[in-house]
Image (tube, rainbow, N blue to C red; front, top):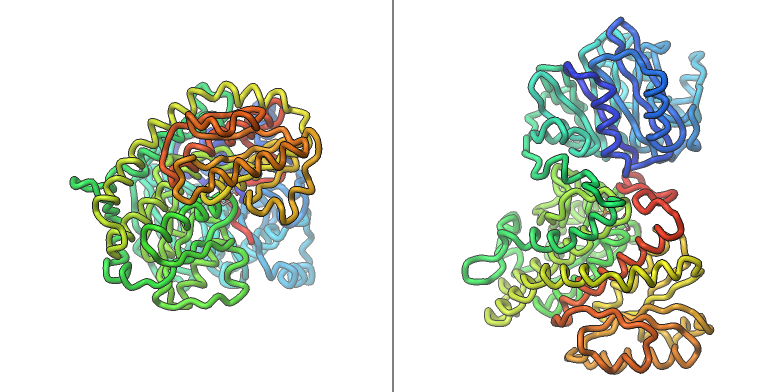
Length: 617
Ligand code: F6R
């Protein structure tokens, strides 16, 4: 939550900051603000409640002094509502220092009481202003921003990324992080800080990681990283593997439309480089977990939240079948609070697009403390979760800007399949012939996805007709069940419609009572070639709900005639073996959620109350 950007160099900082904030806006859009060192020994700030556009219009109407050092923030409110006063930056040292914050300072109450006692007054309800005033006080004492920040971070509890500038040090931005994201962008005669690389990728693709409990000081010609203990730290650099155009809309009506169109590419790129010449999976990054470890694990626990957890549920079915190892999928926020039983033979696989989700990060840390091995499936380079894990398999979906996840979902499932295939190969539970066959089928998925996308017109029409619908149910079985959950989540978060996903077998245990005449139900129909004969069972479910008046939209494979007499609409997907169906069946549901929200006139990229990267618990 919250997007943070910092700049020092020779460009006009407003342009850099506002460009960075635009690309980070998906992280929070309740309010936004900037502070620039005005080049005349002062600080100019401007902040507004509401989306970034409000700030940007105001800056265009009444420009700030142009300076070449500054910080910017786009907020997702935690402490204090989304008002002008609570927007960042906050000021300290009598307006000579500006500070922005992402995270939650847990001991802010006691620190605030101290500050009040010392005569400070507050102009916001935020925990962040406490940090601004404390760093301001420490600056008075030390006369140096890095030293001041260092003094304060050691007093703060909770999660935070802080960035500060001081009017007395016109060429310096200082950043600090604990359990909240921050990366450094390295330029020529300029340097950047950002919540993620999107903040600065328009200017440089050269980046540097900053670890937990570390502090960075950027100047135009230098970057210094130290620990919260004051000791210098050797930071790792990396090249960002996408450019700014990947985070632009590129002519699409929304980022979500663009990202859905990129689903085939997300799958193809995630497979790329992970199949060897003999047609078997070999993920080079899994070297962090050697073969002996993979053979030895007796249990896999997948931890993730939201859509990423549904990708984990799909992966569970495949891994259990191919690698014959039990797999549990847990919501990360539930995981560590029930003291799960873990051992060194447990492999904990975290799935996260952002790599920063606090619940998932904390669960990974907990798993490591308990001695479990950890693997991260992540889409964001330089993110925290991969760095906290023994090994990482990156999904190569490219930057996902729309708040609701789409292309990352199919990439996560693909990564889980690749991992399951390699695990099956290593453990000898999947013979090479079958493994090669599955790999070939997986490699065919991008083309199949492209054909699902090109025949998306019918689902678009349906979504438009249903713009007034109040409730939609989704049914699926086996790997179709998590797809049903994903379809329902997309509709809730994009179109604000009551939607629920159920395992079709659960219908008669309660949910069928919801069916009344006209109730729309999407049914993900397993292939008639399904070895578990689930097809016939789901067709019976369709008959049961139709008999009670439901309007059924079936997502069924090409040529499946059994659904025709019972479904009101049939959306076709290409023939694929059962495990690969979720990748295809989810696309019409992504399109449906997006189009229905658009038909209601809603912002599909930035749904209300949400933020892309949930960096607070
Ligand atoms: C739903 C959605 C969320 C995320 C969840 C986890 O469309 O995007 O449910 O999947 O917040 O986020 P990551 O994958 O970044 O950990």
